[in-house]
Length: 415
Image 1: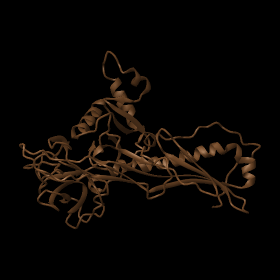
Image 2: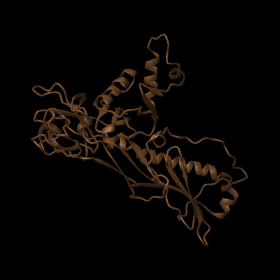
Image 3: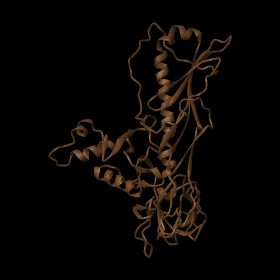
Image 4: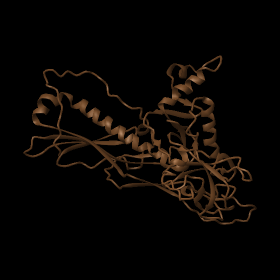
């Protein structure tokens, strides 16, 4: 146990102020899918995993003669790979004369700190999982019309049934609500007008957060460079996972950052406008082909940069994994999005949080507090060091999170 320097006020002059904690807007822990069979109620350790399946994709063939195809059942693994603790220690004298009356307040501050750190980490899934996005990182989200367009694009690609969830930065909400109130209508949405909140709209539950993640883009995005396709790793178009582009700054070591967002451009002379095919059934969607870089990349001395990305692109007819109609060929152009903050819209309750109990810390007193509504757990341990004048308290938790890529779409906004 460390030997901290406590700054505790003398008990004769220290009065409880009644000041509330300066809390952050943090809806993720409370609203994500954290219910797993037997997982949230049994003790677990770092490295434990939960595995679940994604829907299988098939191809419909002409006629009534069966063309048997293989069943490839994709899986998603969520691993409990994160841990944090907030600890504090006191001497016997401090505990007797200063601390006992304020243990609850100290505990609230510790849990609030722990919760904020966990919320920020869970939010990183927003920039490291979905590859589709709405916005350009330059234009603010200010109107209900933009929200409607965002929701329509998200559904057009394919979406699970039931209400959707959308998490937006807290500073975007006033402008959206204000734009709605400024419209001339006979009967306003009185609930929205009085609360200045979006609540549920267009079958979407909106949540406000002050802890959403920021993507710091590489130079290609921040310099607004247009990149042109030179070649791909698979000219046949069956499984494109890497594309080489020209147009970056010569010798730029920071051309692309991991999780940079990339979009194929419309209106390129002699090239088709690239659109994703719908996830089920293979029809063309209205969604432009967008990619997420899976690794940082630098440009060579000629300004060429090779980008690895997700998802793999497949233009091969009859392949269940086909997701684009036209093959990627030389001369097509893309833009990389600049540095931005990302909200997200999801469907199918596919944003997962595993936060199971930790084992008892015998011989020290310990206990796990499980929230029955969300299934998340935080442990409190208490003990003293033998023949040492120290009493310690520790709040700790382990967790893992996963947003299934196809079930989310980033909403990218300028900082």
